[in-house]
Length: 593
Image (cartoon, rainbow, N blue to C red):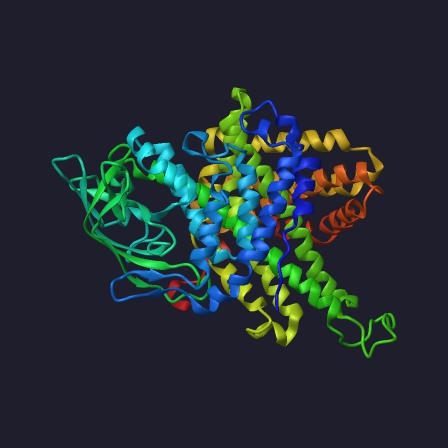
């Protein structure tokens, strides 16, 4: 049977030793996030994930969600009670606004909690995750009345939230949306249309579900510029703010999916449902992007979280499974065979994953810290840089972490051999669950196009040039320190290659957009590898300062050296491929495929 233990020690290392959150105690929210409070949150959150949520992971996978004749949906056994505990314990409120009953702590801590929840039970974690995104979208674009009406209950998790974008005829190209909104005399709208692939669209966990729905007001401009956003509650609120009349929105069916069976993925039918405009007419995408960007960071975290739980079980198996003898001679002569962890290729899979997970966690938390600084820092320059980084890094976090997360889960299954291909072992579920992360909230190919087509050029390239300058400052500060040489040299080489790729895109992407499209995925991978090199260099610096005081720091340095020597050289291949341009990809006529 699989197991999960929250990586609390590694999280503490990032928070206390590397990011030094205590240095931000002058900022709102951070002042309450003392090291002992952070540790308590991590330990208790990890315990809840392990003891309450992880045992339901297999249950949710095997049972799935069930739709009744009355269009209601029953989640897997144990999910409603676990969700009740989740809400009663106050976990959704960690970083929510104090005016809505929240604790007002840094969002970074909520990110750590989300990682643990997702590792333990990814399908379960999607319910509160999407609610948090919907809440933030309403806070960004909603009226004061809407914020007061829906905010507190969504913040606490007592009410759920959803994101309704996709329709049968459109996914990425939202300009093709057909769902219509007809204005009413009382200021409301009648919403009619069908949305598909709506996670948590119907469930038995909360007493109300607040749907955020993209629709087109009659007479609106064609395309993306004519889309508006509406709040459409499952139950229309009475004057006292409690759920009243059932709205004309219903679940028309459940998708039969490859994974995440415990999450209800619904076809949602809107039959003149009552909704209210969020923000301005025809400006719906502006507000929805608040939710989409938060969701994209959350999806990247899902890729990392599934890699973590898969790795833990693969490492256990590698230490226990006896098979053959070590190439250099028996390592367990008293046993009939050696544990497979003695074999170099098994170690390759484990070390690739370990280096990715620990570097990816640092990258995610470092990015999330900039998100907090964007909202909390009094320094305009700090906020500008933080906003630039959030925009630039979001597609990289989403795509790079999910690509590598899938590889990590596949490697964990491969390491288990035939046993991994069976349901009993549990590791094949991680592969099935993580696979969706490369697709939803914008496919990874779309993330790569967003990176090269929008984010690099924004504000004259200010974000990428700021990042390059930050890398140069780190390299300059630590060049010449003998113990830092492998990390500085690796980062220096990767940064030069990323800069070379960026220059090539600037010179060749605008003259032929297909060049940008052809290079985009390799550029994103090059960016992700370089970003993790910076993360590992920072973690190596901290670990060298504490070397010898705890084996934990010695292990960090071993893993950091592995990343620099065995993983980072992939940058050269990605640079070479992106510079070939579009011609090799576009040369074959369509009918020849």
